[in-house]
Image: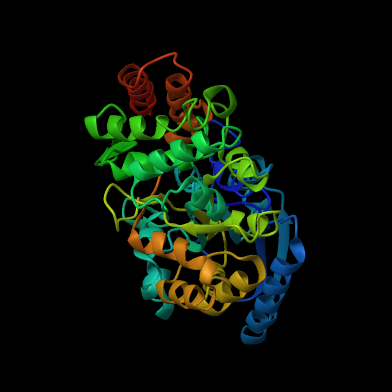
Length: 430
């Protein structure tokens, strides 16, 4: 999920959802489908609101020009209070919007609450819909139905200091194992520098290691989830990642509590030679003191030339089930999420598009985007699409496992077994 540019995942790291339990809903699908009137829209507010507002305002002007007797009323809502606001809207259709922006990690709980409308047919009938990146579109699907259109996506790649790698005599890592080797060599050469800045609480940095080794967070067996953290493959990935949080690379006393933002901040501050950061972090790094001394490549996989699967965060646009204007609302979603407007949002905000052809175009025109687009093209993964994930995440079960390991409180086998058992208990309680 991505919320605001500066939250940069606290943006995506705000997978730690604001509430542990999914909101409930008294909503029923409206039998009406009015083609005129006021279309109410909720979008997330941004720290730098003007660029987003400009794209939205232009879209509204074009949309109202095509639809007589239609007014689009946009309200920008704070991210931090979204859970309460959505819950209230699900339970009181009179206060609900027709269209809303929401994070893709919120989708499962909102669908379980009965608040979102099925948009599968709308997407299938949309000329541009066929060009949506299939893996990104999957993040909007539950039981084969799509409950939104992906508006933008965010992924992570490997940032590194070109000068520090050169001084340490190491090549740019081509495999996950080489990241560990390079990080250790750099810290040996520069004892005051973290070889790579990662952390026990940086779940989106850990996930590529898990997935690249063939591991999984959980398996979906026809709607019944079972944790995969205690498999041999998962344990290999967990081991590879936690090997980075060692005194000779990123000392546990410093790095054990690092989340994604803290890890990237170490790199921006010149305290780390490498980090795993998002496309949404690029601007801040490029404005740092080391703006001419860094580069980005996809996080490599197990073998040279491969790319580790990344977590596909991002935001969707969807239609509330209670809307009395489903067709009109879906048309506005498609207008705002169109190729033209995704390009405009990239130009204004740096948001990565969700159309495969637009991704290719922005990568060709903007060299810095290429590693992130290549990462998307190589294949992304996602968290278990179930409302129970919000409970698992809020309890810190996934990150807690890593922190137990890096602080020496438990070995990989014990910590992964305990985490898997805790996850399964929550899955089974559904």
